[in-house]
Length: 343
Image 1 (cartoon, rainbow, N blue to C red):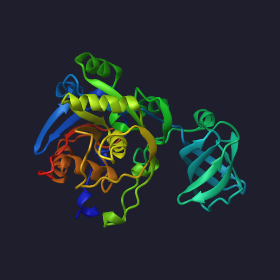
Image 2: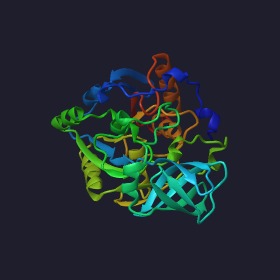
Image 3: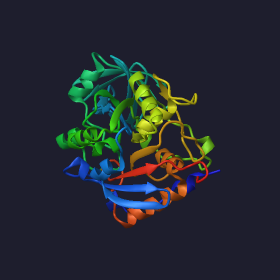
Image 4: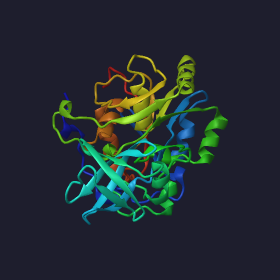
């Protein structure tokens, strides 16, 4: 049984990427196949895929979900919208010196008022005066991860979105997809590599470290996903042809695996709290494109389950020694699923 300390590592602060590279596909790519490590450029990904292989992307779009505001009492607050529930209602985290009371109002961005509703765990229900998505787009700020030291600017508003983002709802980017530009997508298509899409709206919980040594005591955050019928058909076609199903990012993998709990991939939409740790048996995905993840995070546990804990430890040690760039704006890995015997 693995414990939290198995997923800790020391990372020099200067390896945390603060800015993206000028070109999306210019990042480095560490290919991990068991004990075999290969240093590549991200654009070399095309050479590692064959015609008929299927890339599955998460097409979520990051909301401008961060606000600064003032309570009726005059106190300052910071609000992070976690999930838009309907046109005029959302769940949000609220940072304030004193918790707001139900029925009170908060003025956001000096532009509009929201009414505070009931609290559900760490989230408050907020009621908006008009369409929530429109207000977020007009007045919100892009919520960069907590380890990025600058406030989001116009450059971030482009580069912290994938080029194929289309379904608004995330508060963090599916960062493996940030490495794909249209030119690389066109080259992959020309080679015969197939593509399909899922939607998983990444929540702020993705940045939260696990805080209990016994992993069985961890409560996984919830995220909404959709797997459309055409993606199920594309996966089935790739599997029938003996081709690889390659998840672009841990969010795509979580959506696919969450929808495969019956044993085979099923179309539909649902909340997922799937917590993947070593010993999990993957049902749909064969390979994974992913960034480097935070110590003690559920995502580090997921990639350790996928590629093998010893392989990930070796890969991270190699990446640190070779000065790869880490986290959201950093470099990437291409992982091959470990066999049951190897993990």
